[in-house]
Image (cartoon, rainbow, N blue to C red; front, side, top):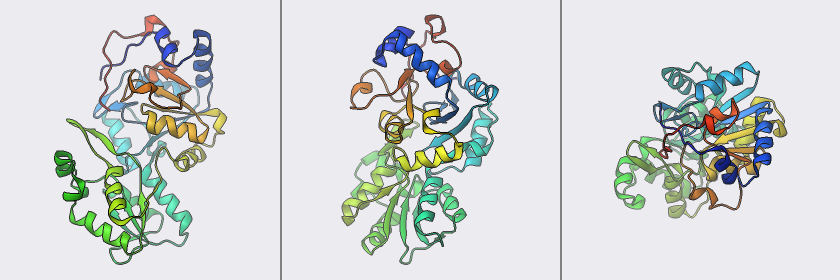
Length: 314
């Protein structure tokens, strides 16, 4: 397992900007929720390493009859692939519990064109599959939409080395520019500018969408977090009221902001990219701050804390 952060109970109250009494009340309020929307990387695992407390958390969700959904901005994998990944990590979670930005994007486009349409896709098969499922076909001849998600077709490796997107675009990116300039609507599965990589970070969907926006003068529409659109879709799948639902994530700029936009209580875990420094950079605040999801299962007391350093790679 990856290392877990080790903030003591009184420190977590300070990070949450709450008194100890207020903190305890909010933690209990989260435990009483009926619906749980959980981010994945930085909350459930780091890459291929399961985080502490996750097995206990999922067992707790099931034991208490909670409704839960894993929500990811990553448009590349299908729910089945995500289910298989958790199985390799020792967790048996059915694919119905996963929702990706690719699925949200396909559902949004279906609402705009109920009879289907055409898309030029720059991304991995998970995105193409989701669009096919909603009745869209792929075309590079005057498509209705240019849809961009995670994928190696952006030439991530070159862009990661140079960070000069305008000089390192692949043929697919250039063609996408031409199609958008020609009238296709530009869609981004999510606005994430960077994402976790094996050796640090790499450019993500938002960076490549921005390149096409700059080249064409057209603005993209994003479907993933922090859009309240994706949150509404997730809440509908859970079948819970927003007052009975929370979102758990490790990023202030996506997970916590998504909860704020959707008026769903956002729970920040310190097991991912957020640390004591960047926690206070934003005008909005999480409902409560935890070391990790395992603390939802039982009381947060000094005895519960692990004497291990925080892991900040997500």
